[in-house]
View 1: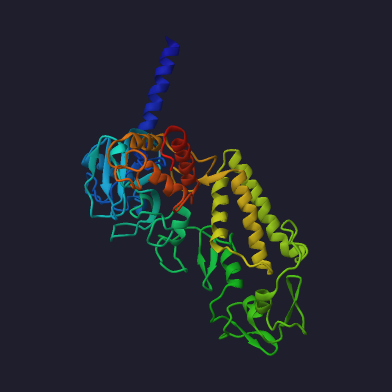
View 2: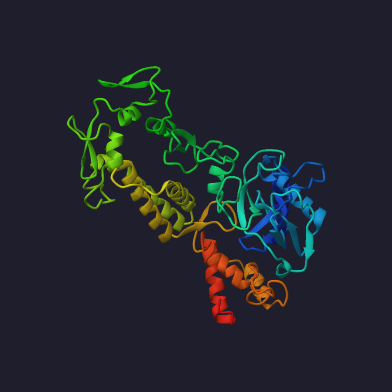
Length: 465
């Protein structure tokens, strides 16, 4: 009896502590969870067109930063539209956003979240019996949610893409949250971050200016000053004279390094096997001219920088390699090292291709080669159920497998190999062409879908597509 009483008291204590946690943490509670009929994971869904029971607007709830708002909006969606079992929204460009209800699940904090889409022209969904009835399903992607005059903050959000393809362009859909964060709004190369950054100390040099850039080449406490030392847009405090670079409050160069790189006076260089060295008799008037035209004649050793560069010049790469190795071990031991790996890989890939023959370009090419090997061998891949990257191989969801199987077995619309029209891009052959050929496997998830469809069509059908 005594042991039973102790167990009862412990249970009661846990219950009280749970109630206290729910009362103090407004984001804790039972979330209604949904899975996209396109595959890609399970999300707490909310609609941009619905208000909560207290009248709060849910547009861009993911980024408003109001405690408890996402939970309230998630519950408001079910109150407004029910639990399906499948809800289908129209989201523009004839694309559809279909979601299958998975029940409720308790979370201490906000789980992975998504909305049916950005558009406001199709606020009321249609109820379907299964995902197989959904034609024109768009792919899950990321968009900057400062669209349509919404309320609250700005930020990137997982949505069903309203466009036929994920274009990875400002104002369009992005394959991952990282790229969306960096270029979600501004339609120029000098893309501004979607919603700004809070506490991010990474910088990148774009169009002659240093801007905050998550995963940028310049990191750490001195990132901004390091970037500004080599990247300027004029109006600085150095000028080029016949005696070289001298301080000048109205000078055209923003840093000594920039002036020394571009100043034609008193700074000639010679190309020595891909390495530009200062030489009074050099055939290049500036370091910049030399770097643009100097190519290496021997294979560069990415481990040491030889034969072009000194150990001191190459030391930054060795630090980068060591950090990448440690992040790989962190990921394999249960840490979040894959996020760092993916951020660095995305940043370097966005700057490629690199022209060989200059220190900066050779460093970056070697870093890209190294981080690609780390990414593939760890392995890391974009998180199919949320933001960032995760450790392990990508697998398609059971819901998507059921969708494709049921679609093939259907006798209407996209059923069979190519659909009843003979050329339906939502049929199994149409989806195979999309994921394998045009635009092809541009992400690990799309590669996984291509592989599954290829196996399914070759071994379980007579389609031959």
